[in-house]
Image (cartoon, rainbow, N blue to C red; front, side, top):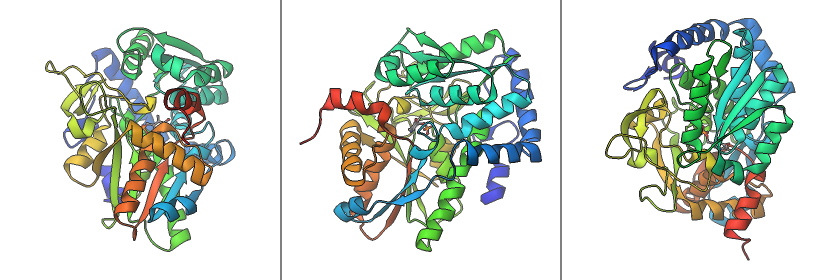
Length: 400
Ligand SMILES: *Cc1c(COP(=O)(O)O)cnc(C)c1O
């Protein structure tokens, strides 16, 4: 696989085997082609690479560390390690692709960034990138998520971004994508739609993956430095799948590494109470690309739910869809309760409050450690939990 893999997938039309592509209105085809061509050219240029490298180091605070969880491993067995994306500037992995997208926007002469946000992390990351580059920024967010993630709404406003409330449907991530997409269609020439994960039409799943690869490249080197070997298992939560692609991409080649993506089982695996796309979805088209999709009888995206706002999306990245089919990555689920328990366990045993999204991956690592205590497990801790503390305590209370 390795470099050959990255050259093969996606193909020129943006397909990862049967998934991906660009199912978009004709007005956008030309814009997407411009972005694709510019990306292929600019991403190889010395000035783009060195500017991004400098931003990663001096602005984002990279490399983020890999950390061995001493007390967690002692309690549950195994050797659990975390790649600390919670320590990336703005508190999650998302700034990795937002700085890349905004740098590309600057090279394309765009004036405005537009996007949707679920948990608010993508909105905050993009608002941060916009401030850094002096670009305008417009973020669409479901009203339900705005209430749940209120501090992030305030952060975006402080950073000078316009937050557009979305009031239709379930008022969460999917509706926010629809709304942001509409606004983008009004002025695609001066605007760039900065997609928040490895989803959307080509070239976004490829670009976002490439911008996130830094996570896996760093983690692999750091893990080998610390232990002298590769991790036995690599675990990450999957919403759209960007933090997971970031860390997985470095290990796809290493057949001895077991790779597992974790989706939210929410309250239960009943309609509207989970977002277990890989486990229960069927191939379909959403937001301009083909992937595993939770859908109703008519093929429309089904309602989804998770306690973690960043995971409640009915689709998933096309590359994950392919990696499932070729069986290189296994996908499994963790429910709300298990995620909340892991949220408190990591906080109390290690002094690290994880994002609820990341807590899904931690919960699975705890299960794996109990099943097979001989193994090492590398978890991508995609973000910090400050944004979730009020919601968790108000909804679930403090444990004994
Ligand atoms: C947005 C978010 C996710 C989910 O997005 P992916 O694209 O699947 O990585 C996971 N963790 C955190 C902390 C997030 O903010």
